[in-house]
Image 1 (cartoon, rainbow, N blue to C red):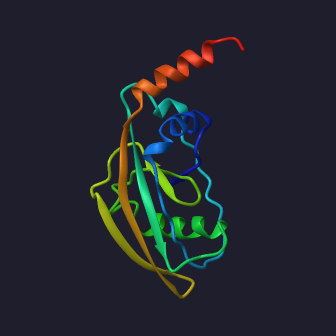
Image 2 (image 1 turned 120 degrees about the horizontal axis):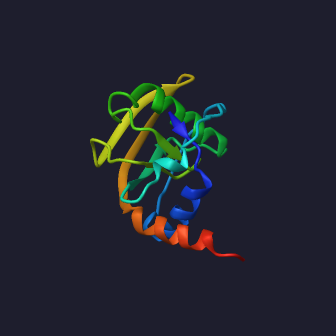
Image 3 (image 1 turned 90 degrees about the horizontal axis):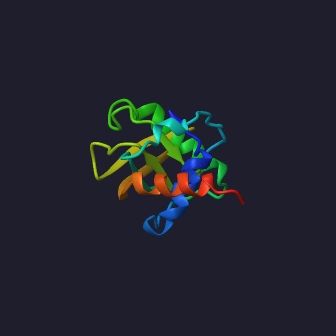
Length: 144
């Protein structure tokens, strides 16, 4: 399951964007839209978010093709290697999970439409969301 990033997550991610230098190299595929929602109630005080770097080879020219590759990765490995942990993919360079995965760095090899891909995923940062949630709550209660 790949989820879209909610407005709350965008605020939290923007606050820690300096921790998330991520590089993605992706290769060809056709588009498939991924639809899912991460509810705001999942981001409570004390929760973690884990930022992952995604590197996909060979290189792809169109940003919509990144999602195709990640969708196939989730279809093949989400329940086994990723412990069924839902992820929020930014569509290009990184994805976020609520909890840690069972690995720090791992390569996945698979094919999409007769093209071989290697997707390398590595942990970039583990971020405590409690403090950012408090900041968000304070800012949203102010009258602008």
